[in-house]
Structures are given as structure tokens and as C-alpha cells.
Length: 251
Image (cartoon, rainbow, N blue to C red; front, side, top):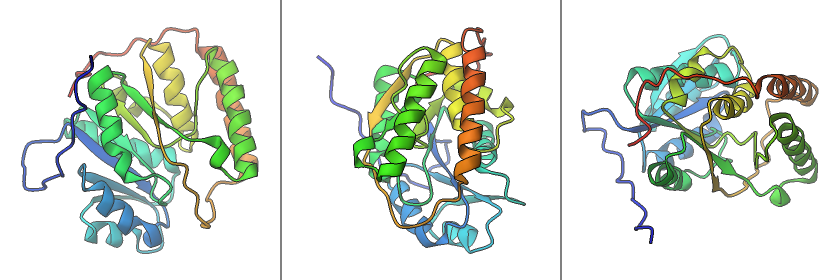
């Protein structure tokens, strides 16, 4: 019988040893929502914000809420911001990174579930699975079509390929720093890489939260880039990927 799930202690910034898991949050024009996200996430993990060229108070708000802040200028896209944050985390010696969005659509209270799944079952990629039925109609259709298309491309069912709430651990984590994808495609590509490397992928159910804030994504370019990444996945998924094996999969 499986034992009790390990719980996370509240993050203590006074501890000098590097954490095994760090939260990395890419942020663009997120001053309105970021304080609450940072404070709630810091109940569980240290937080690194990558301010992706914002012109509002995203950086100062994050710093005041207790996060470490990196700033890249000009705006380069979510994938580039994530990669910057992952590189910093790898340099700090962390074993895993939890990524979530700055707009409040990911509930930080779910953080312990991701870490528990990783520690118990060892998958180096744990993805938050949303309930598409709880989405606005247009988004639900887009996500369902995206799921079917990408699952066809990689030859297996991928329950939610565009959820940005995920835990990424070694040995997959350092490999992702070589990606050249700067947008949301970075998150889709990492699933293909995990499959190519023969790594397991795990899933954690998460709340499906939507607010009135507008998206920074252009629908036309989003679809075009998704189809490009899906075609690439179809070509590459059967090509084995050998990782360098650096790091450990365990906490």
C-alpha cells in the first residue's frame, strides 16, 4: 500500500542550502495579478520571476512580494523567459523546477501535488491536466483539437499539451536549455523530447481558472506555430534522444 504523500514545508528564505525544487514564473505585464501569485507560491517553494520586458511594475511588484527577479529586455516570448529561468535554476543546482503562469490561472495550492507526484513516481515531466469542459467554448474547442492533433503527431494520447503548469526535473531539465523555441511552442516541444528520450510523463489534475484579462497570444500565429511544432514532432518522435544523464531524478 502506498504511504502517505510527503508534504512540503513552507519555504524558509533563511535556509542557505539550495532547494531541490524552485518555482519559475515567466511574467509579462503582470503587475495586477503577480503579487498574489508570488505570495501564494512562496508558501511552498522559492520563487524566481523572469520579467519578459514588461513596461508596467511587474518586476517591482514581484520583488516586493518576496520573489527573486530576472529581467530580460526586450520582450522575447514565454519560451525564452522560461529558458532563462530554467538556466538560472540549473545553475543553482536544483533538481526540479515548477513552472506556472503569472496571470492567476494556475492555483499555487496545487504545488505540493506536483512535487509529491515527482517524488513518489519519478517522472521527470509532470503536467497539470485541465478540465476542458470547464473552459469557455472557443478555448475548449481549440484545446480539444490541439490535443487530438498533437496526440496523433507523437503517436500516443497526451492529455493536455499546452498546460503551462508543470514540473520539470533532471535529466530532462538541462537538455531544455538547448531549445530555440521562444514562444509557447517551447512547452509543447519538451513533451516530444521527453518521449524521444524514453522518459515517463505524469499528470496532476488542476483547477481550470479563467479571468477576464486578455491574452497576449495572437490566435492566428498561435495556430500556425502549433501546427509547425506538431509537424516537427511527427517527424522527430521516432528519433531517439540521448540525454547526458547529468543530475538525479530524485529529490
